[in-house]
Length: 152
Image (tube, rainbow, N blue to C red; front, side, top):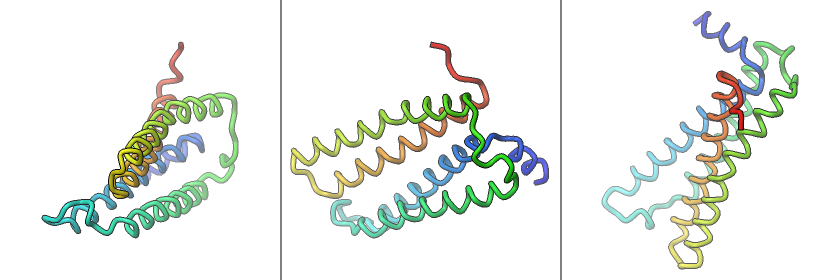
């Protein structure tokens, strides 16, 4: 446990934020899927009450991310808010790469809306786009902190 805390303390503040985003996003989406699939049983998914679990999942992930970042930041308060050019480049790299999934989710939702599919599918396409954006973007940031930015 002590070695884990020392390992976390050695990370840049933005890398800690990326780890938190990955873990929270995966856990929140996993919990959302478990609730929705558990409620469905043998009924069609479009008949499941999904709005409240979706809102709780999104809201809970936002609150959990904030609380966890504050808790992790308290372990090394001197590092909070310190960003150098490398941190900014890594942040930009992860965000730009992750935007693909956000745009893909929005386009999928737009096509579903034009095809007049059930709101369940449209909302879930958007939510999945947000989750994939957070997970991919944060994962690429973590990789960039560990291995460096790719040279184009």
